[in-house]
Length: 591
Figure 1 (tube, rainbow, N blue to C red):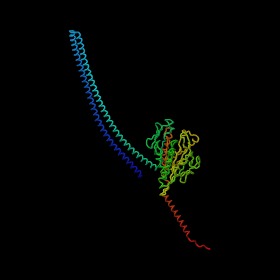
Figure 2: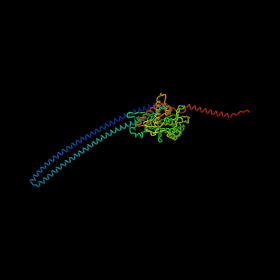
Figure 3: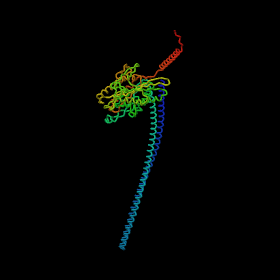
């Protein structure tokens, strides 16, 4: 309760911090609003400058129009004067010509012709002079028009520059305001994200502690990538129907209008690595060394990635090898304080028959083993061989032997489908070198055979019989989960199958239990994926009760110590009695 109170105080502190952040952000918003108003005032000033520039341009247009009118009037007057001068000159020339003709006629005919020619030449020179003057006036007018056009172009350029400057200043002010707002919002988003991550981590820690207290089955969902052969089935069938809106949630779209949302302890997307998957499950694995029983099993349709999750490959191992590697690493770290011994057993349940995969009979052994109930009420496999392992090399040797003996087969859903449930059990025995306390732990790693629809696999003969037994045992597992989910259920049908009977120790309340539900993301498998997720959701609601350690209690150690002391005292008394008996003199005998 103290820890929950502390957590509550932390939550209240976080809420207060968030309210203070909101108040600060509001003040910053008011300051930004004032800054925007100042920017608006600046824009008004720029608009006034623009209007002044426009007025200047109007004045320049008026001056240009006035200049053009003045030049036109001067040109018209010059033309009139030139015309009048030309007419007067022509009239005078004609008069002089007539007078000269008269005199010439009166005097000499040849002289008259010469004077007439001179007069015509003079008239022509005058006409050419007036023509040159007219051309000069036209040239001056053209120069004036060019100057006016240049002035207009310059005014337009100045106006365009002013408008461009105004628009640039306006855009710069807008961009600055946007960048400032964006930076502030990004800061707020980062802060809210930090608070969300903190709250999520706190919520997850509280949830895990609550799950430990209640003993709920922890469920981890893993979605495998779309496979190459699925892409060849066509765009419609290979469509990805899985979405991940937030952490630890998955949405599966059955069709365009129907979608199912599921929440689990963790949801791993297709790009999740084996290392990331094991990181979430590792605290449960490590608790085995503290004396707890732990059961981790993978569930899903055939070809959904269960075996890859549990076994993996040599280059990228799964949960099984990573769990054992972690146990050996912890044994190395604690070697000065704790002494550990590990044993491994591997079995399969094939067609409702329990088979030892480490049997010395070798590959192909069909010897069936029986499940028994011990005096402590625990289910065990009679005659199951356990191998002591001291290194990962020993573990790999055992796993290779088991893989060689396991039943596999091919059908339309999976070329190398596992046809049996595989159970890898690690038993740990530890002794504290300081206190002498001993405890035992057990880790069950179970790769369940895939659930499948016979219509999809086209199984016949032995494959059909195997599929029927697999589905029957998984159905029995569903019945057990359903019974455990009902708090008032008096009877749990563990004995309906060998699988549920073997899991009775784990699901009966003494173990920490975790489940991987593996699904395919493609539309072709959406029915099976939805069924798997529904089953996993039911499992997540089951409360098994708080797991208990298997170590010796304090009273038991005290009584053992008392027994050892009594044995030592009896041994000492026995030695003293023998010594005294040997040293006593013998009485003389009778003759």
